[in-house]
Length: 106
Image (cartoon, rainbow, N blue to C red; front, side, top):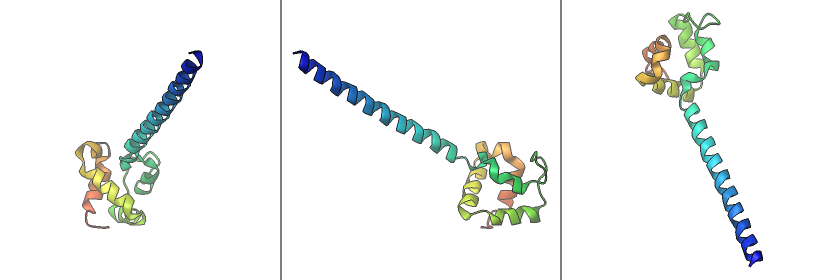
């Protein structure tokens, strides 16, 4: 009887470990997906569009367009999509205004 109980306990321990690992993978996937969904949160690409390090003053439209066209098309598409969402674009209104002004420029 004791041997059978020990075997059952080991199986339950393995099942719990598998469940824990699966939940961790799901949680990691959901958290990374949310971060990737907002291209406007990636500030590494923004300095090319501003004249100052504090990102307060936007470059003139001609320079903005050159920086815009230098970006990969997939990044431009993601930023256009984000700028079309009022909730996401609110924090970056001047930037999104220029992005939407370039609308058809791929």
